[in-house]
Image 1 (cartoon, one colour):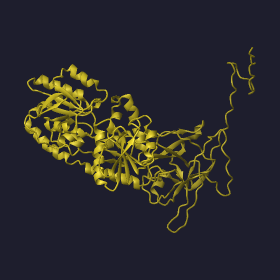
Image 2: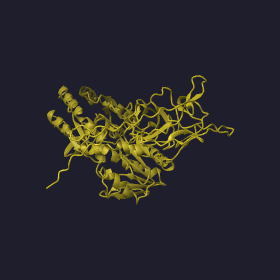
Image 3: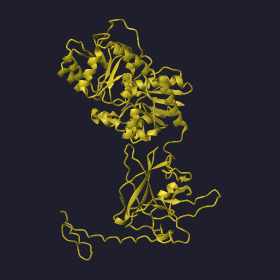
Image 4: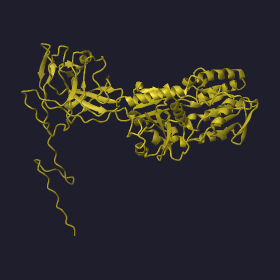
Length: 595
């Protein structure tokens, strides 16, 4: 395979997604020696992201998060000719020359939409459509997987959970007592500070941590509390600096900014403990890095942090400054407790491996490349109804997956007549989102009749033959029904016409006449929107509806109700005057000649 990985974001950032991209490529280069990996990097990033025999750098002109990215990126992919495209930054182009896999790290912007600026919101609002049309979706935690199924309306069985891991660099190192390192022109002594690592943004919940620090200082002024914040500035971070000023914490808080990976490893090893008060995390990679270095950890009891930290960390409610202050105060001088948490953290972090993540991701690549297309061309599909589970009606005509019956409420008004109200019965494809509505007249209390058998019984009966979506054909010897007039609905839809069933002896069953109750409406779920698109609904030509007879228990013909005559058009009014009598056209006003 030729695997193309979108690594353009690495030219601009060094946070979680760029680290995920780089570490995944390093691990893939080792476990996929027979495959070629193409690193799609921005043209301004001259150094290759990964150096390996099977990794090739390919520069791109389109910057990440560009408004024309969905059109320009596919054009730049044409010379690459990849077998599959992996987009680690949520969004894959809709029109692309190859299958695509997307990684969704979190859906914070859907839970807390106010934390994004306008530019980021414009980019991330496309995540729903991207996930719907992607050939595979990878979630970095079970928490993220549940959120994708909830907010993006994707079937949960179609989402692969592949955990991230800490880079091999992050491990315990030997330090001298009282070792000092200078960061941001400020000397730091090992063992004298607590650490927070992340980009500064609203969901990191730093104001709560700062208020907790103020409480700790007020309780014990004799303790030299100090907080080191390592991470670049993000967006809407003004409240953080305002809290430091208002709480008079300038002497107790150090903003180290963006630090290198070796300085970051030293910080993890030198801190008293690591704190993570985030409101929401899709995975929490800094937490796992700190645990890999043997740091005691305090984290929020929210999102994926308990899933990643397990029993090797202390969890605190994210918006309770007093609880954070109590935990920090109790752990500050408890060296024995910190060492116990550090040993548990190392064992917990060892359960996550980039080699395992690369092997699982490679399996997703091969499944997508070797599998059938997710959205094949629409075609007439014949469905074999035997054997059929009790909760299935037919097979999706788009991807071949079985449809699941779902409840549908309300009616659909067809035309202006009350008689043309229909009640939908819905079957949904869990793979591609395709929806089939079986429309029946709203006045019919019993389930819709298919070949004289209620649909509820059809789900239990395995004797029915295959069904095909065909145009209604008249019965031999029966006059061809007239085309609908202008008063009727002008559109036409196909009818769900049962095909003769064939038993084991090769004999065919009787063919039923299509009826007005057997109308099939096919729709597709809008991208990123769980609601259905508006469908063009039409009625079939007049036909005989088969219904069970009340006397003999068989079937008796029921003549359809005659269509009401069209209403006469009202005459127009000119200049507010009454229209002419006897439906005569009104006399137009005299035209004034221009001089």
